[in-house]
Image: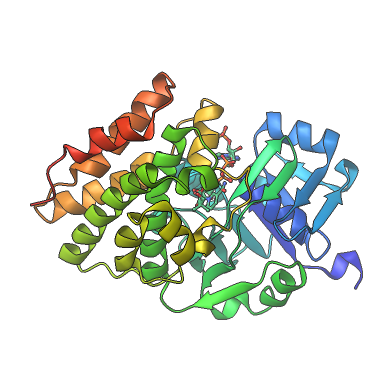
Length: 342
Ligand SMILES: NC(=O)C1=CN([C@@H]2O[C@H](COP(=O)(O)OP(=O)(O)OC[C@H]3O[C@@H](n4cnc5c(N)ncnc54)[C@H](OP(=O)(O)O)[C@@H]3O)[C@@H](O)[C@H]2O)C=CC1
Ligand SMILES: CC(C)(CO)C(=O)C(=O)O
């Protein structure tokens, strides 16, 4: 196919997820990245490299990249992927309003529960679809991306995606189309409760999850969130080999048992970390308010408390101001002394 016949996709938020998805899609669509000047300059200079857990790899030369800082660069897009952190969604929604051609679909490939709502409010007339990235992406050097865990992208079902589904498949990023994205996002939120614990641990995900004391911290946060979800009638689908409500019990198993029962949870590259760890490293605000903070908010709306997740929010905000390395037993003690939700 001539390059001019390829659909145009704007990746709004040139960072870890956006860079990785855009680099892999590059041969299959005309990709425009919108990002910060420091990033666009570095990507133009070095190009983009990507690798994944299965050993696949690719490179896009800097001269072949369309990397821009101006929101109007998204004007000709046939599809927009929003890949900024949750705290930036409102600004992005404002920037995209009035820029896109009528009816162009927008997929939010972000964690958290409310990004689509925010985008929808500013973009009437566009299908704004929830997406979910199950795997971890680390941008170790500017423009160099590694997918460190596995899983398929998910997206809400919508007719406007028909031309794009084969493109993602051809790029090795198959899109699983779902009718139940709110339940997918709730299940992802439960897994993302580990982002804060992983960031406080300063360990790669695999090392952290191999140690029972860290897993017990996560089990506390997840058990509290599950109780809050039950009170609020929030459904979480099954994203792991085990149903969501079994996870805390399995996380608490001794290491040898955990390795046997949940080996797929440890099928993570040794260097993979959570995106929140990457934020703390780079002295950027984290998404903790949209993750653990969401559990606190849902609890409050239902007359409950969520002290464990509230504590994690507080500790991450402290770490944003002054980084500190926690030991697992210290964090566990800090979290264990919180009363369970009423
Ligand atoms: N990284 C990962 O492994 C995973 C991340 N996710 C989710 O994906 C989403 C994106 O995460 P991630 O890729 O890590 O985020 P990054 O911070 O790496 O990338 C986002 C980029 O967008 C930039 N940006 C923010 N606002 C604008 C704007 N208005 N215009 C242009 N650029 C902007 C940011 O700049 P600045 O820093 O200056 O704001 C940053 O460079 C998050 O919701 C995250 O939770 C989901 C699964 C895995
Ligand atoms: C893939 C996962 C769960 C890894 O922690 C993530 O969503 C993140 O880092 O934000």
